[in-house]
Length: 69
Image (cartoon, rainbow, N blue to C red; front, side, top):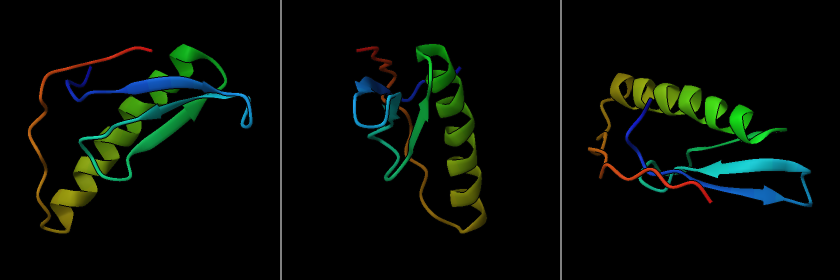
């Protein structure tokens, strides 16, 4: 489990849960269920960090907050 803050909400337009990770610019995921969205976000966070490291970009330390909306 990641320690990055997650903002999770239901999107009527997409008919899916949306997860935003504000500490990692552009890092988002979705899922048909709440748990699927969180699981997808965990995968995307890992990929975001891996890609940033490969490109020599800064990876911020997590603030340690995990929010479920």
